[in-house]
Image (cartoon, rainbow over all chains, first blue to last red):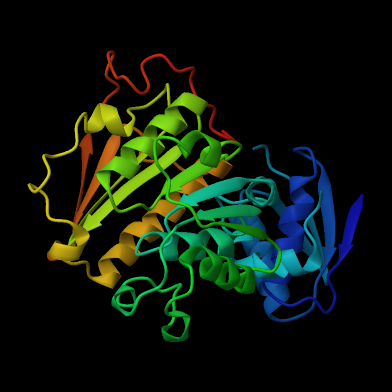
Length: 69
Length: 258
């Protein structure tokens, strides 16, 4: 499982790093990102869903399964 | 060739665009653009291309900055009067984005040197101010199969056409001959409002970025006409001419990233 610790990385840089990491994955592969409470945990999962990915949130750990292009 | 931390931050507001990607950004970084003219159109076009992260920009201009340029050429400032425009544009664009390479060519592009100047460019952005230069740029880009963004602005009117030589109408297909001398007032006589040139030059930058990245649909076979007084934007379709002396015989240009 690919994992990205984005603790302390504010918006929108956390989403920039998440998107670029997802770009490297094949469709169906998952990426785990660790986000700060507040705006990051509110925004990044929502942005990932808007891009069509499957998103699961467990505390500060967000698992994103990459959608088919 | 991954993007550095400072590049990620510099380009963060475009990297989050749904249409954009790290791959699109890397295509821009490895791209070379030649900007013919850094005046009313070339100033905004150059600023947005440099800001967006085009890796290599060559600026071609043989003029020096004059006081009467400053109403419409936002790369040039009052203390820059009498400096060569190409050199000044290089300094300003390099200061805007330290990640890119800007080269100054203080030359006047004509039919003799055009092919040498555009050689190696991935896209040419024509920001020149005469029909003779436009035809020379068009013919050189057609001969070398280099994508081109053509534009013109006069008074409160402007037009833009993107060209993939061999695949879409070139400037000569759309405008086979220059208007007779005297029938169209020169920029000097007709005047140009800077904000209007800013709109047109910004659209040129957008078109160049689209051609370089494959993002979006460029203005191929469509001439965008803008009337600034009413702010009406209309597109008129055009098409390749079988007997075009510039592009009829050329192999089709490839759009990068597409």
